[in-house]
Length: 241
Image 1: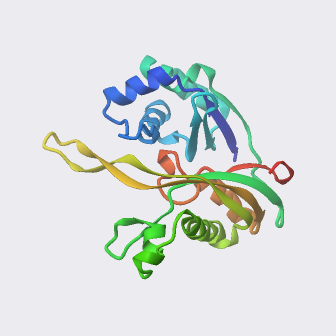
Image 2 (image 1 turned 120 degrees about the vertical axis):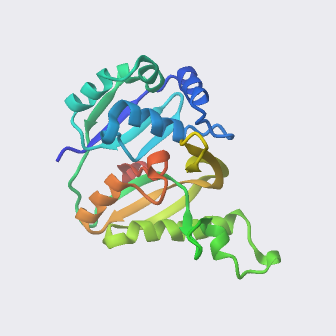
């Protein structure tokens, strides 16, 4: 099976126009739902995920199991507005490792939405969920939040023994509103809902545990909302961290 790292260079003006026209721009300017829609429009069921929109300058990265020929065929069928917004004329991809060694050390970066399922089935900020029993005066600040999110991240890596964290730090944090579809409106279409939640970027080093499980983690992504710009595990040689 091929495993590829794909890169696109979305046009920021065309992207904003498409997102606004389709009503899928977050109040905070997050393009996750818009890019999800654009990738689905361009690639259908083969839409790459997880993905990460880095910036206007760096572009969008995604993992895919499709080969370059298939990707370009899908891209050639996209409508002009979708092609412009995603920058499909500059589609690029390269083979990415699919075999890993137990004990291998790698640098990583990942943007995550650290949430857990509450007893009522709703998503909840992992930090708020963890500190429920702590008095308000001892509720902690960003340092405690970073520790709780780091523990959450370690559990994600540890599923099926995929990997363990050697060290990590929360490099960025904010609360963002991201769009999701919830319920059906009078016109029969699903309504758009903006939900607020944690948005964090972690950097650090990991050690591969079970190579097969690590490959699954890489292809699947970390945590929830992986189809909307979260959870893509970016890797690099450990010495460059």
